Image 1 (cartoon, protein in one colour):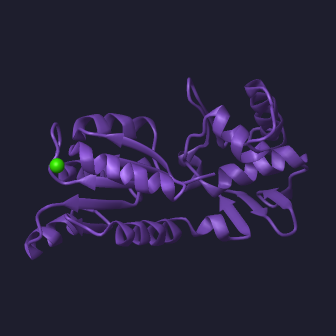
Image 2 (image 1 turned 90 degrees about the horizontal axis):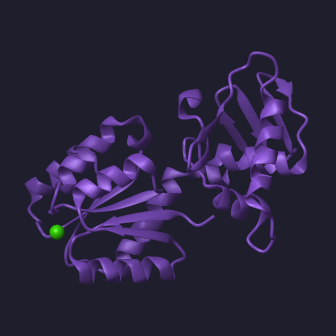
Length: 231
Ligand code: CA
């Protein structure tokens, strides 16, 4: 699945330029032009990376970033701050507010793209690892085996891929459509209810007895590996 990037930028021409270049790199892009609206949207869905302008109507990028760091779901969200201010003291302020990187306008688009790529790689090494783990669940991609609390899970191939998909992005909410694309593949036509059936089967195998259900059903949105379960 393609990484999702949220762009919060009130300069329309710049937002368009960023969208165009990010989409050309294969990212899924959402643009928002107000800080307060971005905060609401981020409470619903967390992207893989946030490009955040400093000066925004509604809520400043700095304040939004500070608030994001206080929430568990977004505490580790990679954030690149975009700003016209270039003074050293302002840079320091940006980074201590919790941004991971800082880009001064006008910036070079290829350089920004390179920084985004590097940051996504750093943020998600799990996507490359053969061992995935969350809570008491372990999955080994090479041997194609999964365990809960040491007990081997007898999963069908679809349930295995579903679990692998959830473990690669713990806490992230996936819509049924995203799960279909990621687990079944874009070219296969499967009804969205099929997802519910397989999530049900996966739950049955991993939650034996009174074990806690690690899969969260998010009403109106989809499913996630519960972030309360992860730590
Ligand atoms: Ca601005």
